[in-house]
Length: 472
Image 1: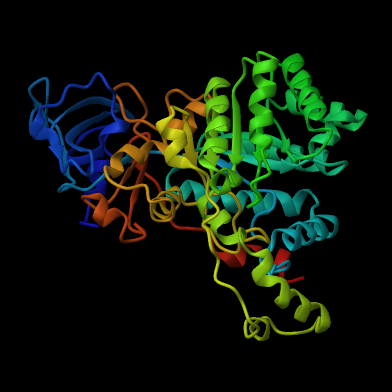
Image 2: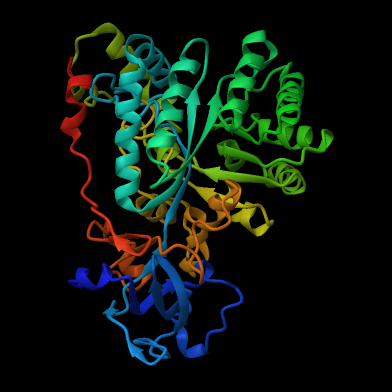
């Protein structure tokens, strides 16, 4: 990135000049001349931003008013066409599971083994210190990359709920000056039909969280959803569910969720994650669900990296699983020498069709360095880049910039987050990339992150911080 004058960025008053900003991140009311539009296929606007006392004071077409305020010279920082993004919003993560790969790997990479592995890891290791430190490691990564708000799902069965929700509450307070944090309970829906499930709903309400869970096809699904909605309505809670994370076209729990929301006239916000099976259903069947989702005002969040990693694995890894069972001490590279099968699909939901129908769509990190996804770094720009590639979110790329900013912020009830407008905090990401062709080609590791107009330390936490947890 061109060397920025950090001394000027630490001034209380300065201009960011010659910035390329995705037009959807700017207010609709901002009138810009055609000359402010750069490359129609990118939908970028060339603007100057005035920063005063940590907030955005004005946005003008480039060179229109930069460098002056009331006739007095003001320091300027020339971005030379570099892109400026709003702070990122990560709508769906699993911080409590994160960064356990070093002690609990999943070399088959199947969903079933991921479930077994994480349950064993939780049973053995998940005390308050372990959960706090791993969750905070994820927050450090998110913050350094430019995330301003994040929602995490928390495994909430039995006694683990009290431990992990207490940890989350502590982190929420400790990080209140840096990140807006929200949490969702994660259990199977049958749990809410038990006394323990009602206690969990009370805990979620007490913590200001979101009621959530995993939906599964079965004869009791409608009753389970009715119970979930009753608990949510009685406590004034929003709902966030894992739905149809499979390649089985017969998995249509998303449709059942939409029908339940309409049946109960639910007025809260519903978010459904994954929704993978939509992509393997017939067009007519998928459209029936999409129409109901739209009518029920449900937002959909896709997890492109994790689902690309997990889906279409079962058949490919069956033989490798047999080898692993027969030779439990086998070193992982030996398993990779067994025959495999190239995956046939990408595991993502119908993002284009949902967006075209008017359904709010977002993409998010999901799991990081755990049995469900062996990679990841809580980086919203990486999520966006990989989402563009995996889901073919083609030009104008700027139209998709909302999926990691304004749309997830709206679904989290954060109307001032994930956008760039006068009066809002100057929580911005400055990139050397001038156009999307440049942004999507490199990792943007040299980005500058501003919080309330001031550059923060973007040094990522050292993996060695967790060695004593992972190597014992």
